[in-house]
Structures are given as structure tokens and as C-alpha cells.
Image (cartoon, rainbow, N blue to C red; front, side, top):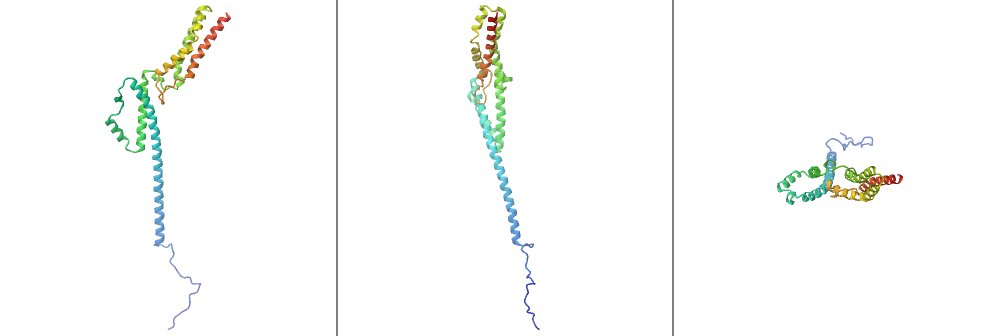
Length: 236
């Protein structure tokens, strides 16, 4: 019996197991690595999103807290001026405990609580303004102050025109013109005081008296009335 010892030629390739065949441990490990990397990336993105939202909530809560404090400071001063005891302006322990429980949910819960506090503070402003012109207390400053400066600025000019129509161009009218010269300054001073008494202070704790606007409102009617009366006296 003879054995066939013929060599393997190049045309007959050696059959090997493909690397990607099913059950290959390298491929299985690679797939597990990709799955873990995707899961880790998803967790990282979720954590970054949550951290960003929390940071924005914290910043918004800080801004809301500053606004509430700014609004509460003048309210406390006004309440003390009205005779409210200082101890009544301090929250009681049960109120503090209730507020603490309502803010245990993190920055978002704190922001919600602060927004509620701001709405209550705005309502308190309306209540404190009830002793003045409450319906116009939150109008724009110029429109609101016009209700004070306007009548004061018109009072003396209208009176001067009435004196001129009734007394003519005599000495009485000349005396009324001289007496009416300081009227704009007096009207402005009275308006300045009345605006501070009728309207509540703004967020900065100060009343916006619009002094330039008030001075013009008090001055223009007086100038027009005096000029008209003087021209009427000179032309007669």
C-alpha cells in the first residue's frame, strides 16, 4: 500500500473559520462594548440635560427671590409706618415649616413657591394702595401723575381767565396776573407731595414722581393763560 504524499498546491486554499462567524467571542465582546457605550452616552446626555435644567431653575429662583425681597422691603416699611407691630411681620414657626415642606422638591419647587410669593406681594401692594387712588396705582407713571399735576396746574390759570372775563382789563386783573406768577411752583410742590401720598412706591422703594413731566404740566397752562390775559389787556 502506497501513501499519497502529493503536496498541497496554491490552487487549493486552506479552509479557515471566518472571524465573524456566529459564536465568535471577539464579535460578541465588541457588540457588548458598543451597547454599553451607547447606554453610557445616553446616561451622560440625560445627566447633562438634567444638570442644565436644574442650573436654569436655580438661576431663575435666585432672580425671583431678589424680586420678591425688593418688593417686600417697602411693604414692610409702609406697614410699620401704619402702626403694624414688627413681630407681626415675622413668619411664625408653623408657617416656616409649611414653607419648608413645600420646597422639598428641589429648585423647581422653590421657583414655584417664589412665584406664588410674588403674586401675593403684588396683591399686598394693591391692598396697601387702597387708601389712595387704587384703581390707577399701577398705571404708567406719567399717566398716573397727570391726575395729580393736571388739576393743580390748571387751577390758577382757569381762575385767572375767569377774573379777566369778569373784571376786564382793570387793576383787579393786573393784580391777579402778578399773584399768579408763582402759581406753577406752588402747584408743582403740592403735586410732588400728593403723588408720594397717593401712590405706592415702586420696586426700588421710591415713588416715581416724574418731576420734569410734572413741572411742564404745571408750567404750560400758567404760561398760556398769563400770555393770553396780558395780550388781551394790551390790545384793549
